[in-house]
Each structure stands twice: as C-alpha cells, then as structure tokens.
Amino acid sequence: MILSMQAGATEEEVAHVVQRVEALGFRAHLIRGRERVVIAVLGDSRKPGMDALATAPGVDRAVAILEPYKLVSRRAHPEGSTVRLGTGIEVGGEALLVAAGPCSVESREQIREAAAAVRAAGAVALRGGAFKPRSSPYSFQGLGEAGLEMLAEAARDNGLALVTEVMSVEQIPAVAGCADVLQVGARNMQNYELLKALGRCGKPVLLKRGLSATVTELLLSAEYVVQGGNPAVILCERGIRTFETTTRNTLDLNAVAVLKEKSHLPVVVDPSHGTGVRSLVPAAAKAAIAAGADGLLIEVHPEPEAALSDGAQSLAPEEFRALMVDLEGYAALEGRRLGRAERRSGLAGADGGVNARRGNGAPPPGPAAQLRRRIEQLDAEILRLAAERTRVARVIGRRKSQAREPVRDERREAEVIAWARGAADGLGLTAETAEGLIRLLVEEAVASQTRDRAEAPAD
Image 1 (cartoon, helix red, strand yellow):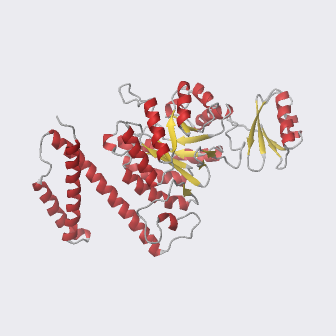
Image 2: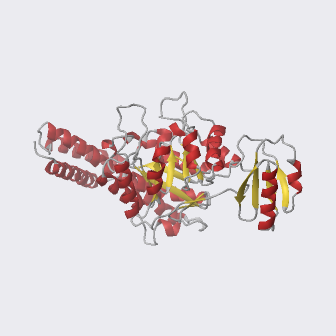
Image 3: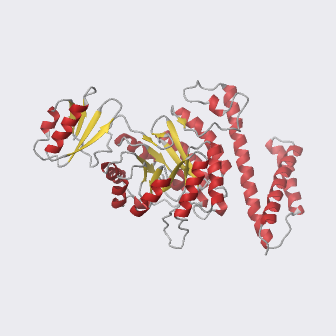
C-alpha cells in the first residue's frame, strides 16, 4: 500500500503515520516528492489494521499496489524521479545523459585519449570498465584496481562524471571511492547480495537488464536496491537475447516505453551492446531518444580496430562527434536537450553553432537554416569516412611493415586517382576536384603509415 500525504502535511503528521505503520508491524519507506510525501507501507497486506492507516491525520489517500515491485512503481511516485550525480548532472530531467567511452581500460594513454575525445564531443560522463565479466575465461578481464585509478584520473582531468561496473560486494568500497555511478552489468542483474549491498552504498546505481530478463524481473532487481535505502537507481535497456543472429542482441525499445509507464525511475539505453554493430549504433541511439530514454551509454574507442574488447561495436571519436550533432536535433524534437560538459567548437556556422540554433524551445529553423544543418551533417560524415579510411590505411601500413614492403605503392595510387577522375562526372564533380580530394586522402594515409613505422620499436 502507498499512503499519499496531503500537500500541506506537517513533519509531525508524517512522523505520526510512520509510527503507526511500524506499530502495526509494517515497514515504512518515505518517498519525498516535489509537492508531497508518500509513505510506502511494506509487509503482508493481509495483516489486520492496514485499512486504518488510510484514516491517519495528514493522509490524503491510500493506494493499493498490485505489482510485485512497490517502491519503484509509478504508483509510488507518479511524477517520476531524477537521479543527481556527484558532478551536478541530473538524470531523468529535461537534459539527456550521454555517457561515452571504451568498453574497458587498456592503458593510461588510451583512457585519457578517450576521455578527452568524448568531452570534446559534448558528453558529460565517461563510461569504461576496470573489472570486466567475460563469457570466456581467456578473454581480457580488465586491469582491475589499476584500471579504476586510470578511469578516475581521466574523468577528473576532463571534468566528467564516471560510470563504471562493480562485480562483487567486495569491490564496492573501491569502486564507490572513484565512481559517480556504480554500474551493475547484465550478468549481475540478479546477484541479490550485490544489489542489497548497493542499497547501502550511498552512490547512484545504474542497473542493466539481464540478457533474458523480463521487465518485471528488472524492476524487482531495482526494488532490492531501493528497499535497501538507496533510491538513486537508473535502469538500463541494453538488448536481450532472442532468436535473431544478425545483431549481437535485440534492442528492446518496447521496454523503454513500458518502464517509463510502470516505474518512476530514469531509463537509459545502451545501443552499443544492444546492436553490437558499429554502423547500427547511431540509428539505435536516435530511436532510443524517440522512445523516451533519459540518456545513452555509447562505446567510444580511440582506435576501435585495436580494442581489446568490443571493438566491433565501438565508435571512433569522429563518428561519435558526428552522432552528437545529430542527437541534438532529435532531442529537440522530443522537447529535450543534450546535457553538455561544454559548448562544442567545430562544425558551427557563422551564426554561433548548432547549440545556439537548436536550443530547446527555440522556433523551428527556416529553409536556409535547415540546409545549413544538412551541410554540417554531411561535413561530419565526410570527416568520419576520411578518418575511417585513414584507420584502415594504418592497418595496411602495419602489415606492410611486417612484410618489409615500402610505404608507398605508386601504381596503386595512380589506379585510385584514375578511378576518381572517371567517377567524378557521375557524381556531379569535376575530374580535377575528385582527383584533388583523393590525393589529399592518399597523402594523409601515407603520412600516418610513415609515422607509425617511425614510432614502431626496432626489431
């Protein structure tokens, strides 16, 4: 049962109701909303005296909750709740949380580069794992406490909140000492001893849905944390296991809408794990915002092809920057905005950039502004593809180096340039423009290959 106190109920009336609840052998759990206090009465509803609680002074109404989860139910907190992180970020409000970073910490240099990249793109939180639960015992398991220190340092130096996973009760003190949000991974969603301990940790908890868990099971797991005394829980849809094999998981966006309807807790989506395919992450992220998600967890790695874990689903920094530009427009369509660590430079027009033009509540842009917006999107896509080309060229360069082949292949370069000139007319470009663009890309690839070779350790 939920006892909703009157809007003007005094603290003495609230305390009196709590006393009566406990005297009858029930547990009282207070939920303080913006306008009123709600008291969740926990215990066997068949006990005598339950009905009398509705007549206590200051009580507005009593509502029976039929769902197996009580404290996380929307009935317990109709207006929805927000979770405030240590950096002042509020999850569940108007601003959308974007937490980005690599699947796991691999080195100090890698995590510092990743943190700087996601900060520059406008994310407000760094995500990354120091302790990694892996299906195979032979896979990279993370750097442990050393990795945790690297994560904390990178987040602190870039002014980002830190979201990282905790795998056991024993790890809670170390992780809580460094992180702003303690993540419970899909494999631990029903680790009830861990959930109970997180109810006492005093830090926000991000609870990922299990691989085959129902929505109700996810909410019951959240109930463990809230019942333990920690109301700061964020739910996360990260894809479930189905018969589909073309993607790593099936991203269940139905669950986002259902969770927002049935629970007052904020809901975020992890499109990286939800799809497992880098090219699908942007579309899934946009769809998540449309479904009502309060934020996104996105994997970003400085060099996805070299990642020790989950490289296939990780965005490169330039891909993430382009996605953030797009997400701002999608957030505005939903009457929301992206939480920002700082105003982004680059990809901005003379009128002050994307933030100024597409702020929440601004009037719809006119035709010229819409076309400029499209130009910005195309520029971002061109940069993303150019960077992707350079990364592939670096991989080729490393293989050339191992085979002791020269960096330049003038015959191949000539073939590519001849192809570009031939294709130009069909694309609406002059042959000279097409050749110039390809020459620039070739020179960038050769320069990157040469740098890699010069920096490689001698045999």
